[in-house]
Image (cartoon, rainbow over all chains, first blue to last red; front, side, top):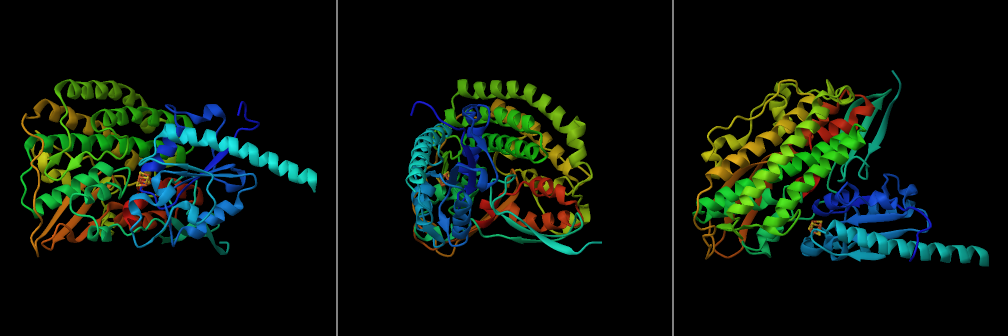
Length: 147
Length: 362
Ligand code: SF4
């Protein structure tokens, strides 16, 4: 991936995380790590977002919320599971209210482990996500032409 | 008066990183009633004591909340130590309190940043978070982690902090203090901040007592419930400790209390670093708590008083572990403060209690 054709906007949702990963996601947006220099902006509106950063596992109560946010996002979209909780439910795996990682609710494109995930890992994951976003966009384009 | 309508707030909302859902009943632009719904982050952590033994549970306790991670591990460890009558070395007590006060600085700065974001002062948000990174650097140098530290062990702490490092912490704090005072100027004197906070979401002293609210939220309404005053652990060795109180009970008072608490925390850390005794840092805990033994403990966390209860059953696993967190107390006060406010102020008031949903729901 030599260049990106657009600046991706992200949306962040806290599944059932302990906050550790959430504050790291926010830290990635602030001056020390500053992902804004790549044009990445945090938005609150799923319809504006290209990348869905989700922290924490899925439980009975939030599974519908997560699916709702995912469905409201417009194609092409990429889901990044931030932190080991979002990947596999991590330390909370044995809890009675936890269903599992984010992939139990929606398809995940990039798994970024770490407890808590480091901002560098988040940036790496987003950059990887950008490549996937680009590919998905191309595929969509080709389908449109074919139709 | 127009017809009453219900406006949903959350669970996914830009101003809060965490999910809480409020049904706001509004009439014209005024909020007349608030119905909170919680449970989006409930995991069931208290039950994990059945599968994790007392030593392993420290790492679970830490993950009750990533912001006061160190506080929870410390509070849990203190309670289990009391349950098993373990003496903690003095130096470890000092190190714990130093780390805990550093967490308070990081937590309050984090909150001040989010508050700045809530009243639309983006650059102030960025500056507070920039300053906060210095505390995280100290954490990383001491414990190896930025937010989840795993620094506590039953009976002490994992590793010592040597003299040069302690001196370095003092240096960093001295440097921070200067920049922090400039930030404080913006938070406490800027008219655009005052316009959004003064007189917003007022809670009187009587209401604060009636709803049993805790932490800086209560102290802003002139209720002194800072449990650091009791002087547990190294807090008892401070030459003096005066909780920071304010009488106005509005959002501005809450910003002010937290802003001053950061300076107070810096002073506490400096004093403890000057006084810290030498000696061992760990008194290893062996065996298991006796059947039928019970212990409880309290700790003043950045958001207020946390209560811990543990009981043993003769095995390595606890029989029961219970935590009461500050936000579960404060949500009642928050709904009270929201009634009668403008719809546009909801963000600010919700944030002003510094909600920590993941503690509340565990
Ligand atoms: S991965 Fe660790 S830090 Fe992140 S939400 Fe889970 S427990 Fe918290």
